[in-house]
Length: 291
Image (tube, rainbow, N blue to C red; front, side, top):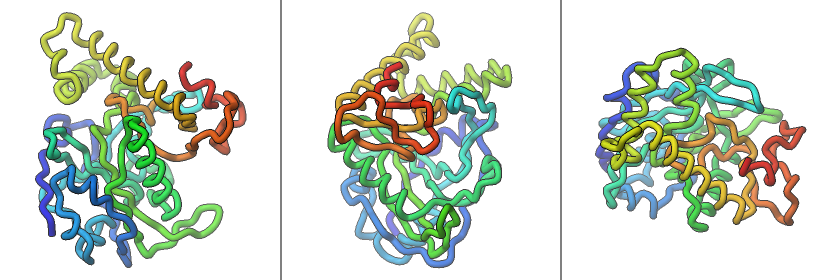
């Protein structure tokens, strides 16, 4: 089995910002997709991950040495209403790697079962949406749009109950970090100013180390995040991309696209185009994304 050289700063430096948790075991892991190019970026041997042990790893049955799976806490504005506690309801952050270019990257599961933040959901994912996330994420990457990326998808051998019974899967996602706008909102909503400050310091160290000694560094961090997110939305608009659920739990501090749920590339220009079955009012229509 190829070695994951984990160095898990989030788990180590931010106790109280997450819940330690284990992925659910599944009956029949089978590797459906492995991103060889991304594996190479991460310093992993893709050929060593294509066997049964690799399938078991990417399905969550056997974790690599050094992994510290955690469900992260965050809040979110969803369709104009504020939910003070959301968190990883079907995802787990396994840990962080330093890639071959010296960048710190998160390795996380999506669809790995219930967590304390699941709010009644089953914590699972289906094969179709997870493979679609591979396609959309790699398209965004090829277009030069900042994005999280899929390292692997493993079938679980389970049936996931949605409108119809569907085959289950787990996605392994790679991100600059999983820090979200909603991560800050979670502690702000609770009046936990010291933890908010701690989170800001961690964020600066990870994404904006040049701001550590800046006067008004918290304001400078806010400006840097706003700049990244504005640039990201400009990329989306240029490519005709509709995110579909631009809630604050789906917007990263790093400025990467994350959470490919109801999203699409627009086929013909129409600023009113939506791509979410529950966005009846067009709140997240293509033309509303900059606002």
